Image 1 (spheres, rainbow, N blue to C red):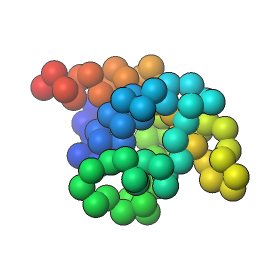
Image 2 (image 1 turned 90 degrees about the vertical axis):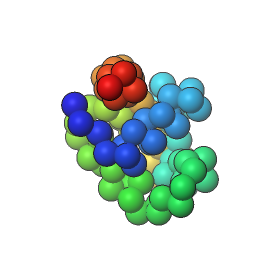
Image 3 (image 1 turned 30 degrees about the vertical axis):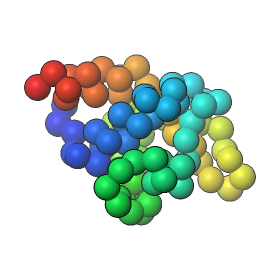
Image 4 (image 1 turned 135 degrees about the horizontal axis):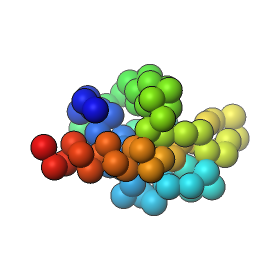
Length: 85
């Protein structure tokens, strides 16, 4: 599976932060603060929706009005495949 740079960074940050379950999910605001390289929050949000549809991440619990996201086992596998290329 081919990942964009932004998608790989989002997956890597979710994995590094331990966001592997619904309760540990991160919001797009939290991801924006943690991911290096000035990626806009809107780009993170759009990629999160795409990756959710692909099964790489899923919705966690809501944080106020914001959705949170966590990496799935499929996302971990895709990230590992990307790192091994």
